[in-house]
Structure formats: C-alpha cells, structure tokens
Image (tube, rainbow, N blue to C red; front, side):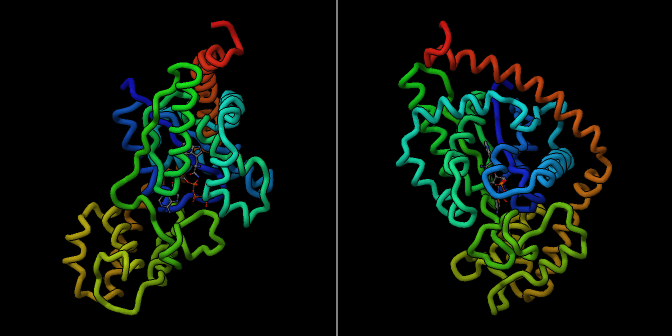
Length: 326
Ligand code: ATP
Ligand code: LTN
C-alpha cells in the first residue's frame, strides 16, 4: 500500500448519484489497495457566490455523507482542505509556473465564470486543485469525466515543476469508471447532472426519500419511442437510465437491454427507480446514525495528521525552489 490516492469534493450542495457513480464509488473501493486521502474542498466552494453560514453547514453535511457512503476514517485521511494550509502555499508556488493562456483555455472557468461573475479565485481554481493532488505526491485521482481537463493541467504542472526544479512529483493518473463517468441530468440528457442545477428534478440526491426518487425517475426526460436500447446518439435519456440501472443493480447493460427491450418505458423506469432506492437506503440509514459532533472530531484529528504529512512534502518543495537550504 505505498501508492497514494487523492480526491476532493466541493461542499456546494447536497451530493447526488452522479457524484456517487462517477467518483465516490471509486473512492470507497480504492481504500482496499491504496493509501487514500480525501478532502471536502471548502476553499474551492468559495469561488462561486455563497453564504458563510450555509458553507459552514454544508461542509459538515458533506463530510457526514462521505462517511455514510463508505469513506472509512480508519483507512482514509478525510479532512477539510482549508485546515491544511500547505494546499494554499503550494497553489502560490505552482501559480508561478502556470501560463495565463493555459488557464484561459479551461472550459469550466468559461462556463461557470459567465454565470457567477468572474473572480480570480475561480480563475485559479484548477491550480488549487493541482496543489491538492501534488502536495501529497499521489499516484492516482478518482474523478468523474468532467475533471479530465483539470487533471491534464495537474500532470502538466507536475512535469514542468520536475523539469525546472528536479524530480519532485509523481505524475498522477486519472481514474474514471467505465460506465457512469458522466451521469446526465434527468431533465436534459445532454447536460451533466450537477449539484448547482437549479432544477431539483434534474438529479437524485443521496438523501432523497424513496418516493421522491420514484417520482424523479418517472418524470425523467426520454424520447417518444418505446424500445429500451443503449444508444447514446438517439436515446440519450434511456442510455443514461441504463447506466444508472447497471450501476445500482450490478447487472450488465446488455442483460438489462435484453430483459427490458419490449417492456415499454413505464415498467423499465419503475425497475430503475427500485434499484436506486435499494442502493441509497443503506446510505441514508448510515447518515442518520452518524453524530455530527463525532464527524467534527474525526475531521479535526485527520487534519492534524494531514498537516504533518503535507509539511514533510512541502519542505522538499521549498528546498527545490530555493526557499530553504537543501
Ligand atoms: P457543481 O455542480 O457545484 O460543480 P458537481 O455536482 O459537479 O458540483 P463536484 O463537487 O464538482 O460536483 O464533483 C465531485 C466529484 O463528482 C468529481 O469527481 C466529479 O467529477 C464527480 N461528478 C460530478 N458530477 C458528475 C456527474 N454528473 N457524473 C459523474 N461524475 C460526476
Ligand atoms: N474540482 C473538483 C474538486 C476537487 C478535486 C481536487 C478533485 C478539488 N480538488 C483534487 C480531485 C482532486 C470537482 O469535482 N469539481
């Protein structure tokens, strides 16, 4: 277990099944094979308009949900990004080797920037993400498909740093699931399911009650045909549901297609909803059983340990760039 993994999630709202299928499921699985480090990235959450009291609440809720999903504090280092200041320090150092042109090409900035009023924090968001990953010198990063460009930047910065200042960082690999790396909105199968979509019906939150889940799947947007087939070009809504069905039931897409090809959309959607309800019930139960005070204590203790690890790594970085004797 000498290989390390890092990933983060923003406390910008309730976690949804896109987060689970695209990333969190791998977070949990990778605990068996890697030294795993996970963050609630509260500094990232400040790059869009937010309310301080709300952030305080959501970061704790996010931590509690991660524990409920299966992040195990006896095996993983789980902490709030802001509690380990070495992330911010490395962000500064990396920003001095990042080109402005490269940053201007980041599509997430272009998309979110338009909506939220642009600020420098949002612009340099990907450098903070690179620092999160590199400060721990990890080898792999489990994320959904939408983080591909950010991971490329991270790899690029690691290579640039190594060639300029000497071998320091491993080049981290992106880990995405084969199926479900990009779960689509239930209301618009051409858009990614997202926490910040104003439509509640567009996503299923991990804490949604069974009846809410059934209703959202029933009213999800599909085409006007009736054949259940896996065909992203012509049947994006159905293909999205098939991927979710496969994830939550453990059955292959082919099997499900064969079983439901003639059933019509109604019964198919009902079965999809039941699989999701079954998959989320244990998470909801564990969430309710977790005590907030206990969650807070876990986060504090882990941050302490993470600070020690990050500091050891930063001493090497400072020496490499000329900020302390070698
Ligand atoms: P926001 O809407 O605020 O940008 P988000 O829903 O995209 O939030 P993040 O916190 O940005 O969620 O993402 C956490 C993890 O979940 C990342 O690894 C991301 O790639 C993954 N993820 C987010 N949305 C999806 C999705 N629709 N399908 C698959 N993976 C996803
Ligand atoms: N940008 C990521 C969240 C994130 C992250 C990270 C993911 C911040 N730092 C480090 C992996 C590794 C997102 O999902 N929006």
